[in-house]
Amino acid sequence: MAAGSSPLVATSKIGKSFRNGTVALANVDLAIAEGAFLSILGPSGCGKSTLLRLIAGLTPPSTGTIEWQGGTPARISFVFQEPTLMPWATVWDNVYLPLRLLGMSTAEAATCIDEALAAVGLDGFAKTYPRELSGGMKMRVSIARALVTDPQLLLLDEPFAALDEITRFRLNEDLLRLWQRHHWTVVFVTHSVFESVFLSDRIVVMSKRPGRITADVPIDLTYPREESLRVAPDYGALCQQLSASLAEASQ
Amino acid sequence: MNERVAKIVAPLTVGLVILAAWEFLVRAAEIPPYILPGPVIIAQTLWTDGPSLMGSLWVTLRITLVALAAAVVLGGLIAVLFAQSRLLELSFFPYAVILQVTPIVSIAPLIIIWVNDTFLSLLICAWIVAFFPVVANTTLGLNSADRNLVALFKLYGASRWQILRFLRMPSALPYFLAGVRISGGLALIGAVVAEFVAGTGGSATGLASRILESGYRLEIPRLFAALLLLSLTGILIFAALSWLSHALLAHWHESALPEEE
Ligand SMILES: Nc1ncnc2c1ncn2[C@@H]1O[C@H](COP(=O)(O)OP(=O)(O)OP(=O)(O)O)[C@@H](O)[C@H]1O
Ligand SMILES: [Mg+2]
Image (cartoon, rainbow over all chains, first blue to last red; front, side, top):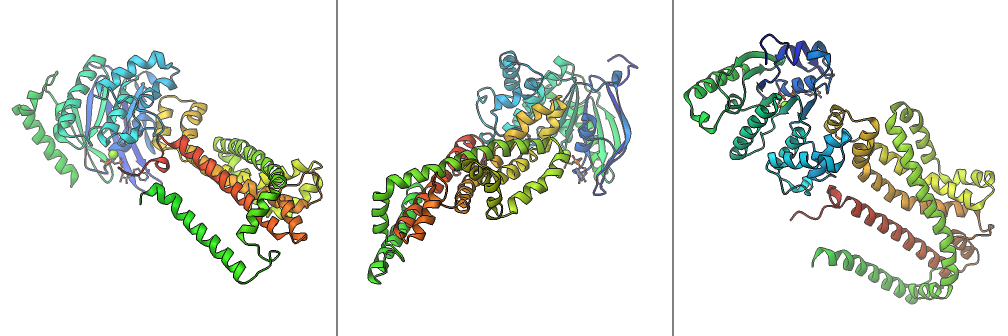
């Protein structure tokens, strides 16, 4: 990213109130640099999912605006907090969906799909239906579906929350590797301080009622990040700092 | 006893016990056949009158099946149109309801007067009775697609047609099939009711007119035999549609999944 270039997307003073009167977000200013790995950390119900949906354009903001670099929204992939798979379609067909909507034939799409399935460790489950998968496996299908289009902006809403620690760590590293290889911009929502510090180059902490940003912390750890980082002292110090911010935000 | 055997044996036993009790009652109380025939006489009548009754059954069945097909196709199309435009749904749905709640016996005479062709008039009556469950269920199904999936489709730039074809239609399939299952029985009822209204006059006489006719002539065993054929037909239609529904949903829908292992 060249210094001084405009961010990929920037929200200015956006807010969201729902019809039932809930003010989910208020006055959020967030500029996301191209190529960033940004994590959003915050207590349950503080509006993280809402913010992500606003950025993706799935719901319009009640106040404020969203500016895109060059005026047009980026190619976005979204991983919902729930797997959100089509129960009538096999794993393969679920991952094929974005490409199918782009008009790609099964033959053209096959390599991409197999790669995406392999990336989340689900090769061999192509012909399986979602109901035959565990919760974590469904979530990985959902991630494969997001990866398959090679997006500019990848929005992930607690994608690894349902996974065991080993799988989670592995997918953390895989995600980092993919991010570096493809130069995506990633916005990653999580409850886990450790995960967010391990992954991100910047962490935003949110607090609730109304949802707002209370801390914005750059993470100056070098990439590539390896398993060994998880026991490094500067990693520990950052985790401590973020935990304190999160505790403050949760009050 | 295992579930599958029980499913067949249990209701069969109940049926046989009832039949035996019926036969016994009729003989013990010496009830004459023109008041209440016993199962044995009914079975004999079914055997001797079978060929002619089967001809009548075919007339009724043809109306039923064509009406059901029309209900499925037109009902499905109407539902798709409703799902495309909320305004269309709001404008026309109340009239579908009105058509549904108006007793068919009260409008059948009009239809029979207006439409010259007997087959066609009976068909229209049966269709009016049968189409509503398909429309109502399919509309509900098309509108029940997962919100997040709809959002996902839009995010990937899906056209209205793609959302309909790849998302709304598959989501609606279980609802649609449930509607068709109800419509199958209703189409038969509609056909019979319309035949009753049309009376025995027509050239093509369905099972309903045979029932009427037998009633007038006090040939009660034949009336029962015709009634039996009618229920068997209804059961068969329901079973066939249930099987179809199960087969189409077997891979994924909760309703068609085997018991938890
Ligand atoms: N469709 C909706 N209608 C009304 N209120 C809503 C709706 N969606 C979310 N909310 C409210 O907005 C607030 C923020 O919700 P959101 O889902 O963004 O939280 P979150 O930070 O993602 O929480 P979690 O970590 O538990 O997923 C909550 O108080 C919630 O009750
Ligand atoms: Mg959330």
